[in-house]
Length: 241
Image (tube, rainbow, N blue to C red; front, top):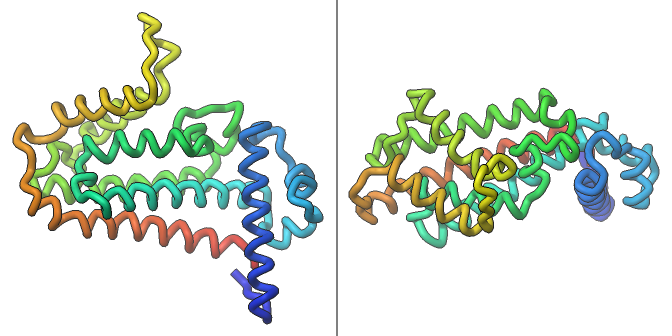
């Protein structure tokens, strides 16, 4: 990221870049990735097309920044819940909470549910793959910490364990159209069902001592904080201000 000479001008550039990102996110949801052009974004943001290319070299890098910004929002929301209650580090609390948080971030939900109409080629984009790989690394480290302290039966060194858990959580966002009974649940009801299944299947039968949870919570927060810092660094690296 290159900084302008004057702090006032630099702040204007930051605000303009944020406005462009806001517009890009809005149009992505409204029209879908395939239909949104740089011209569209420039027109709705009230800037010239060239101005956008001053900030991002390509359309893909612009939308990658949109995704990174959304991911940071989600993980910071998760961290806030842990700060408020360390028990939020437990899978049966964290994963349903993440489901509810993601429901409020439709761009990330579109990527997770592989919504082609909205996300389009972003789903197969190499940059999204890199983001996903970095996130998966953090998730493995999270479960490794829990496993070491006896807080979960999920051994991150066993690929089938993480696969089973991911398959379970993903099903709560993708499978409604395939439910034979036609029964539909609210997102809050889904989160409750998910919490019960995870608690019964992937956690020890005896609830953990609060002292153990409080001991490990800062390390979990640090994992997610580092993920956010890495994403912020990636944004700075590809955004000219």
